[in-house]
Image 1 (spheres, one colour):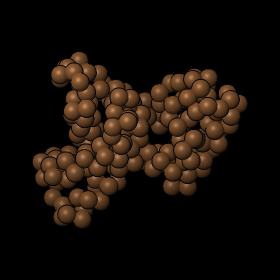
Image 2 (cartoon, helix red, strand yellow):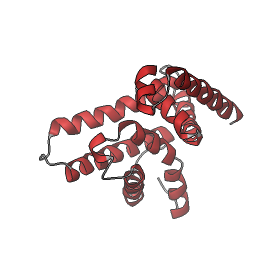
Image 3 (cartoon, helix red, strand yellow):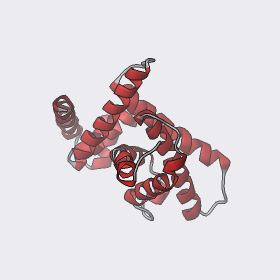
Length: 187
């Protein structure tokens, strides 16, 4: 990929909200008190920027997959660095699997499997717009939408987590989806 420094920065920055969404969905609980999501995202973008000359992809979908691998590696390293146990290959596989599953759940929320390259490119563009739109939701709505639609949590689980009633969570989901639909149709 032949790009100048500004173009490389723009290409990576375009995926920041996508990385933020994945990190929020799969950030290991044991790291939450020791490390911020934004630190892992920044480290991922830094590693990607440093290795961008080696990136051989040509599309946003390939860039998203490449960044997801770097994010996975960074989360594995952080877990190992802050954990007491020695490196456990099973944890590495499970974290990689969890990030891949989160990404797949998000993508499946947008559309069924599409085989043409132009359809995959369009779906990746939609995924990046969705990540931006989700990031713009108020915190409680964003968290409720992420927990319900991408983590598969029940209303009562979300209500317990957020300290709200089931009806209040239903309202958060309704308003969150309404705002997402509005933002995505505008774009």
